[in-house]
Amino acid sequence: MKLVVTVLARDEADVIDAQVAFHLNAGADLVIATDNNSQDGTTEILRAYEREGCLHLIHEPAEGLRQSEWVTRMARLAATEFAADWVINTDADEFWWPRGESLKQVLAAVPRRYGVVEAFWRSFVPRPDDGEFFAERMTARLTQQAPINDPSSFYRPVTKVAHRADPQVVVGRGNHGLVGSSLLPLRTWHPLEVLHFPLRSRAQWRRKVELQGVAFTEHIERAGTGYHLKGYDALQSGRIEEQHSSLVVDDVALARGLEDGTLAVDTRLRDAIRSLRTDEGFAVGKPLTFPPLTLADDATYAVEAAVLGEADVIRVERRIDALEQRLRALERPFARNPSR
Image (cartoon, rainbow, N blue to C red):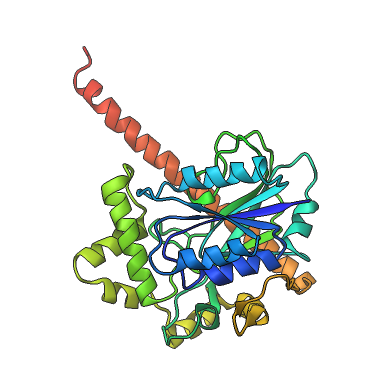
């Protein structure tokens, strides 16, 4: 079996080295990366992996954050040019964690009739920036007990998908699903977790807000999500430092979250990255060892899967409400003038 991981990056030098090394040591045979006009050293990091023969690099000069288009291109390339059996489409701030011996091992166990596997998205909260590497600082994450009703939050419990290689695949926005695919999803088993680190430092958050704000205001027809819009508004009005501070979880907030069950300490990535560190960077060809799961782990995971299902119901209800509002708006002119 051959596993290919794709990643789309722009100005992610603080995380991309660890991200690529992690997946190559977690079971991926190859990484396909698209670099979109990076200016901070990301390109040079990716080129180093390309020279080692474990990464295929695509340079994308276009503006507009055309994520679905560019990720679809990589996913199809994995199938047509690199003979992949499975493909995982990642963001630069994600680390896909297998609930088994390796990414390849858990995907190899999927029955042949199924072609899509869902993974839990685990969002780690920003912690005070003391200059340490993000994985050393960010060891607290939201649990599935955290609030799920805030549509503006990027911490909402959602899933992402891994899929069998398909030369005709279309990857949806945010890599959360496939569009019009005939691949059958396996919805009752979640053998993967996505450790997500969206806000790693003040400087990184400012740059992310700036890039996405420009993309949504100048290049993308649809509106941005709630947190994109809030961040860009803060940047435009000179409140970005204040807004960043409001998102950081300090020691008091961490203690409160641990007590009420909305936060959990999770040092898995920190420990994995420590094991890969060398004087020159991160080792490749040093397979990670993933700790075996206990019955307690499985029981907790089953409860979290149920909470995720509740979140899906809420999102469906929101969509239905929005459609009903649009329908009523369309019906109003006809109600006022029945002869039309």
